[in-house]
Image 1 (cartoon, each protein chain N blue to C red):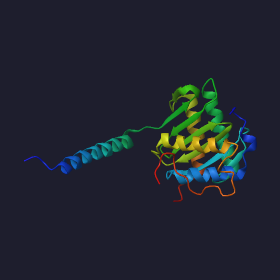
Image 2: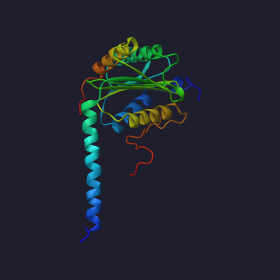
Image 3: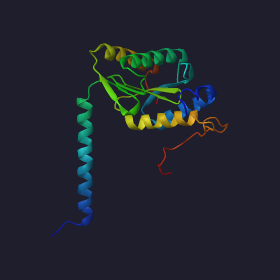
Image 4: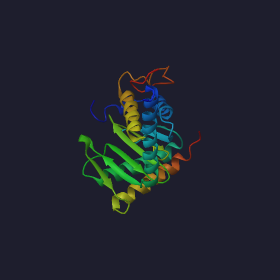
Length: 73
Length: 139
């Protein structure tokens, strides 16, 4: 007996949601700090934390994070 | 609009409304500032002096890292994420929690600066909108 059509839709939707949740979980675990700069025309450049520019960018970003403080909400 | 043309006409009140708009649109946002082309703080969520200094330092470092002025900056650290965007002579710098959605945040920042730089900015009106929705959002 074939499953009811709404069950097929529900199963498919649940599958997508599971995959999305797994992707987000993996992203949280595996994501490393990065510094990315974007220029006019869509060009972008990444700067590693152990490079001179990257180190300076992370220091400057750290100061801003300190100024912003913790979220009050 | 030529870059740098808008900053002279933007008021602090309008910038404050724009920052409030960004804060409302982005639940991950911890704080931010809007600067004019000279680096003066038009609006900030806390100590304007420190925001001005540290935002100028970040943009300076970012500019020196390449061979042309940077347009957008995205730095993700363990403690939070920093986004900066230049548009029409203005600059917006915000700090968010980790894993904020970068594309949405840049979209909102660009929309806020574009509106702020426009001659008839909705942020400049006495009844600046308390709540706005992203274009295309139902409601």
